[in-house]
Length: 106
Image (tube, rainbow, N blue to C red; front, side, top):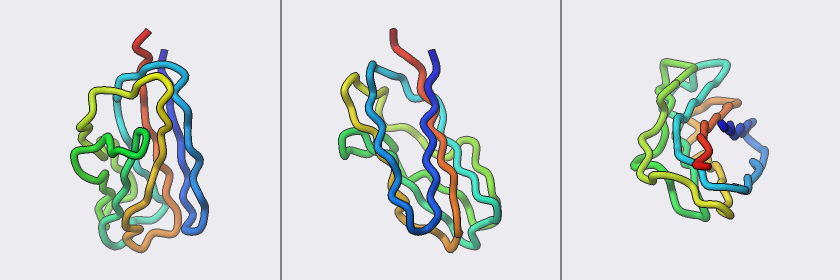
């Protein structure tokens, strides 16, 4: 079973934390902004406070969609984990949608 976590950042919002009710493998990470940010926008996804990415997910300044935004350093998310999203650098964008695709391990 697939689970998709969505975060929306509008420059002022606090983004929700998600609870993993079961174990998941990491499938894909997408970033989307209505307008290209102007310079690189950087995002981090964390599992219990530890990044699941080998480097920050990046939306370059010239594009508004990145379908393969990050390289995962972790193999998966354990049951009971809390998953959070953090905008490290806005790159000048006003809003950003972040989507993390997960696949159930059971």
